[in-house]
Image (cartoon, rainbow, N blue to C red; front, side):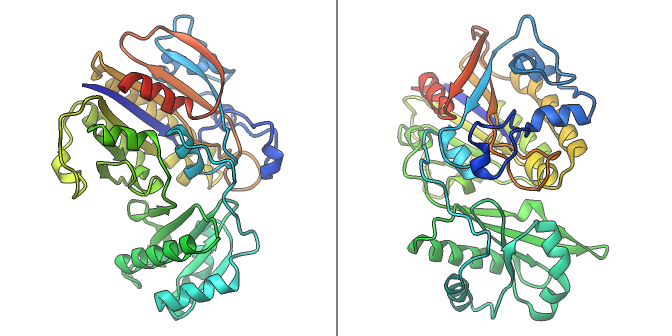
Amino acid sequence: MKRAIVMVIDSMGIGAMSDCRDFNDTPECNTLKHVCEFNNGLNVPNMQKIGLGNIQDFKGIAKEPNPSGQYGTMLEKSKGKDTTTGHWEMAGLISPKPFSTYPEGFPQELIEEFIKETGCGGILANRPASGTAIIAELNDEHHKTKFPIVYTSADSVFQIAVDTDLIPLQTLYKWCEIARKILDKGDWNVSRVIARPYKVIDGKPSRISKDRRDYSMVPSHTVLNDIKNSGGKVIAIGKIEDIFSKSGITHAIHTGSNKEGLELTLKAVKNELELSKIAYPDYREVKSTTGDLIFTNLVDTDMLYGHRNDPKGYGKAIEEIDTFVDDIIENMTEEDLLIITADHGCDPTVEGTDHTREQVPVLVYAKNIKPANLGIITGFDYVAKIIKEHIF
């Protein structure tokens, strides 16, 4: 059975796009380059062997004279610098119109409808903010009023934070579902509603990553749908099922960390996942005429380190990812294709805490692949193209 394995290192961009100023970014942003420089080089021998260091000069990542795979740089066609836009384009769906952002906060009519439909009584914040900062600032008032903290960012997101020792997690999820329905029926064009649960641990509000959920707009059609419709399995690891609103997915499992996501990806490659436990209720196994897709998002680089301006943690996260690459390759069959890439940038060394509009690396490996420098590729949909060529 042919399989494609896609691993997205969330936000590991490699340099500003030419239109970065249209997205309020500096031409100097380069997430991987700056993380390498800050850490005086990174130890990533497995991605280095495929050809990561051949793409451009990254301190500590050597150029490989005999790379084991193909390597290149992908430029985004879609107008955006967010997770949804990047992943959708990888799956073959271009977004020519950017999602809407709300730098002044959400309009009052939207907030009033949210309060009415959820019955939450009121909201706090309603402004762009760093999630960790806004939760720390408003935690006391949240406990006093029991109102959810609603905030946004430079991205197209409607984020809802609650202390789940105060407001049950399932209530938070329900409020997010209601927000998604309100946004979808109006002309708000908001990419994602994000549930941001937290708890007060040792006196400090701390977000609970494993319980985060994203409620994205539903994509029209992607390569995931093509694979599912042909009888193949689409195994979503991490927040992939949220990014695609379950469209085109047959099996899904959320993760609480990159390490868990990598362990699950390795299990999937080794056919050790208990698929019956993570299959969608409507999934019915049939004999596939094509192949399967294992699709993993590794979010820690972005969520824990990029947005928090922590280049040291970012570097360690990349090194951790690399330690799994050799095991994944070792357990691949002759009919497997591995793609390692990113969805946007989030340079932790430049001013601000938002995503950065960047080009991304792409590494492609298979047991019998002909090594090649892919050069500059226009479109993240190159990923969908080579998945189709491999599977169909």
